[in-house]
Image (tube, rainbow, N blue to C red; front, top):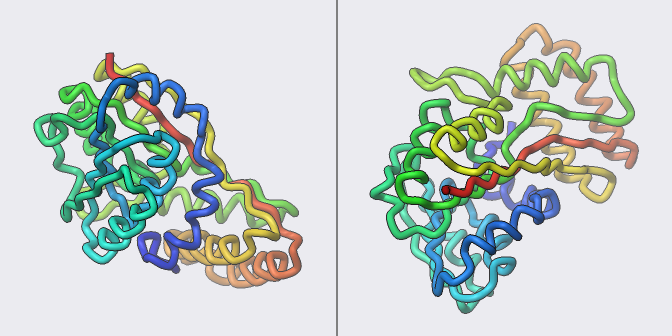
Length: 267
């Protein structure tokens, strides 16, 4: 299974991510940021910086980005990737984002993240919502896994693989139980509970023949995670994956992979 955080995987998915994010959430965000001379934007779990490359030119004007991630190599890529935007300054912070407090976010005009919420726990999401509320800081979270996959043509094993994958996304690591596809709903409730106005939009990947490379790698990871969760699927999944990859190679497979975007605006 391709590591969801590897530089190669992040580069492969970046065009699909850019095409999927809900651009209509930017209008209320721009309205909230209007008048901020050089907004400070904190990008949590920044990875290789695709969120910055997508959002910075859409916001326009001078900005200062603070990019947080555990991986120093990815942070170096993220900072370098902002070079095409001369009005944008960047600093990087290596470390865990789950412990950030309102004091840590003081002075930030926006907290943002992409594909992050589903790898957090309910407690971590609530703490993040509380921190944003204390800092009176809007939050834009894009591309949270929503759990539904629509493949065409259909296969009898689709639903079993989808269910096993979703269970894998909700797995427990030590004391941490990940939210997986429950993340969009849990996050919306948490931010609303802490006083924010919450706007949500769908942001599905739509993969066809033009995205064959991404579709093939996504399929390998999707099926691999399902088998890891349910080893009894290993035999049937081998033939299933072969059929699906053959369909990708032949230009016959179309996939809609659901995600959700969320904008939380503090009162």
